[in-house]
Picture 1 (cartoon, rainbow, N blue to C red):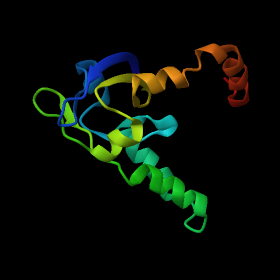
Picture 2 (picture 1 turned 180 degrees about the horizontal axis):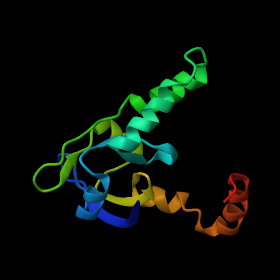
Picture 3 (picture 1 turned 90 degrees about the vertical axis):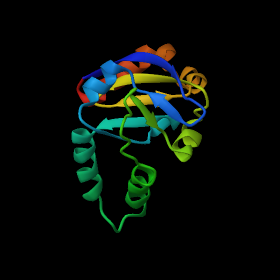
Length: 141
């Protein structure tokens, strides 16, 4: 399970250090792509394979399904960390998530989320926690 919060910086070349704990939990390889809420998602390869399979089963004849599939696959990348644990995040992905210098990486169960700190603060749902908890009943939680 991926968990925790880590603050790091992206260098001028677009490289980001993935903390050792997260690299270890992500395993042998991972895929980075656009995420929901204007962040980036980083999936372990096994989780990505399951996700990709679900995408491939969406009906080709449904426009929204095609757009949904394109959203995740279009900018997806499987970067290889260098010896210092850095990965290169493409300019398109950095632009989408509003990543400039500082970033926050969150372990989010089956994936890691990479956020612009200001955007994460704006999107924070802590104030609505009672409402969110109530909503989780719909998912039998």
